[in-house]
Image (cartoon, rainbow, N blue to C red):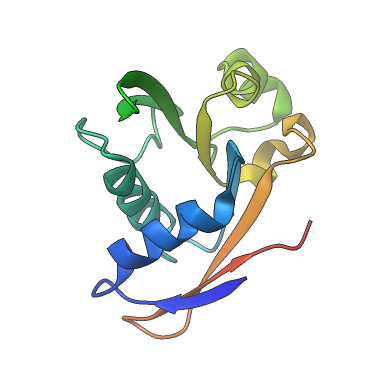
Length: 141
C-alpha cells in the first residue's frame, strides 16, 4: 500500500493506516532525517486517542503512552533508536521487551537493531517528495 500526504491530510491518513494495519502490533518506520516519521507517529497517536504529550524519544529511547480501547487502558510504545549504537544497547534499554509485550510499538530508525524485531513487524517507509509532501509505503511482507 502506498499513500501521498501532507500536513493537511495527515490525520485522515493516520486513520486509514490503522485500518490497513489490522491486528499488527509492531511498526518499523524507515526514512531519512526530516522525512516526517515523528510527525506521522504523532498523528497515529492522535488517531488512537492518546492524551499524553507525544514527543520524540530520541534521548529517552522509549516513550510509553496510554490510550483507551473499548473501555480498557492500553499501552503504546514510541521508540527512537537513532542514538542506539547496536542491538546490544537496544536490548539493555528494554527495546526487545517492548517489542514483544503485545502492545503497539511504533519504532523510528529500526535498522539500528533490526535483528531483535519480530518477524511479523510491519515495515513502513516515509520519503520526501518535496517540502510539504511525503510518500508513505507499507512494505509487502
